Amino acid sequence: MAVQPFDITKSTGEKVRFSVGKLKNSLRHSGASDAMVEEIVQRVQDELYPGITTREIHNRAFALLKKKKSVYASKYKLKKAIYELGPTGFPFERFMSGILHYSGYETKVGEVLKGECVSHEIDILAQKNGTLNIVECKFHGEDGLKCNVKIPLYVRSRYMDVKGPLENRKDKNFEGTLGWVITNTRFTEDALQYGTCAGLYLLSWDYPHGDGLKDRIDRLRLYPITVSTLLSNREKHFLLERNVVLCRQLMQESYFLDHLGVSNGRKERILNEMKSLCHI
Image (cartoon, rainbow, N blue to C red; front, side):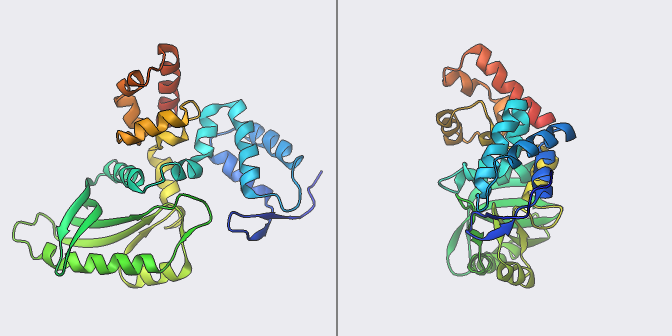
């Protein structure tokens, strides 16, 4: 039976019309089969009511998906998992450095560059194909917050201060430079307009279309450890404090699970989860 149209509440407080199609697409994106998606959507619809928040819908779908297959639930909670990299932005910088590294860039985190006026600590230096990319990350720890025009304005001023000294270096091993702004949420229209006009490369959760942060993570299978449904919050914090940010890293540095006192049986289950995420 068709659900009568009604509004739900986004994290920003904005009311929008509930879309069955969007819910189905997000579930399919996790890898769930069409039959599984239909079953979960039907069960979620039975519990909907006007004004329900998108968070409540997500949590209910996540719980049902987890019962079916935990690795699907892990992929489904990706956006929330990135928020869990906080409260500081440093793990997010490490996470983005990892994504760029596996995309063929040579990366460094937290380098200090001398500018025309002052020195600047740069979140990520990423070099590829003769271009040195000066990358600044803007991390938001909760849903509903957007990256406004002040961020690309600020980033461009820092980039322009270091651009001259970098490009005038006699020992440089690159042909040119490019300023980047990366955020785990979305850009406002003003931020996109200014950043594009100013010649910055902008990367957000869903921008550029088809090549946003979400698309890159799924394409490269570079998931943060916070997507895990088997690791506790304490264990995730322990790993993040030791710069283990990617599931792929934990597979390579599994001895950290021994430091946490994880039993052999549970360690095997955790590593199988990591392997499924990396190779699904």
